[in-house]
Image (cartoon, rainbow, N blue to C red):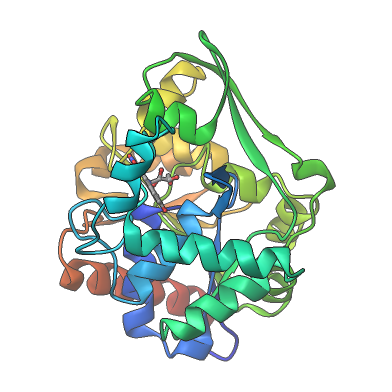
Length: 315
Ligand code: FO1
């Protein structure tokens, strides 16, 4: 391969495949673009959960128990904030807070989120390119039976319990894809949709003006790994969200969302019986073991995804 692989990802699920890809591709051949619709401000600090999950994972620093936050982190600051009566439902660890303090300082100095991410990644020795989908603010808002909720309120504070009516990405129509993202869309050899929530992780990325069109016109292979296995999400609320939005909760539902911008959907062995249904959406299907528990699983799946890319490039 000459150009890089462009990987689109949300948080924990996407980071697993991104890590696998980082083990099998030279760093200059991997560009990871993160959803920033989940970003929010806590205690006056700019927090970018998906960017940080990807950054910590690629730096080998992620908390293995949760997939987000820093391994071995402590929560002294949060405990003290709680004593002051401040909001403490969002679990910001002490080391993690250092990232948000630095990010906020640099953003206030006038740097873009891309520049800040590049700087932080450099300090943590993250080798592949990691960039936000946009330098402009985009906010995922969930319309629920309990009113409109910002994503972290829905996800963490209310534990995904409210029933969803719709999801929108405030600011997306005025936002621009980040320069790194635009460059990768123009120069990448292949696109990989990591197994991230199709509604609130991949959705905001696709909502940026021009991105869907560029992915539609993309000339290289576009491969996705389904985040839904059977009728369940590998992680998080994807299954519940798809169900409440009236969509099919299966790899077929994922294929329908990606039809026109994806060539191959990798589905799990458990979904081998859905291959024909996936193909009926216009997306080809390949059956693999997609559940990534160990680093070896992540590397193997990444290798297999790249083999699909190579086969398509050679065809
Ligand atoms: N997820 C939780 O379920 N509970 C938390 O308290 C929490 C804190 C948190 C702090 C920093 C960070 O970068 C991520 C954090 N996450 C937490 C994960 C985050 O809410 C989600 O992983 C993503 O936004 C969904 O992709």
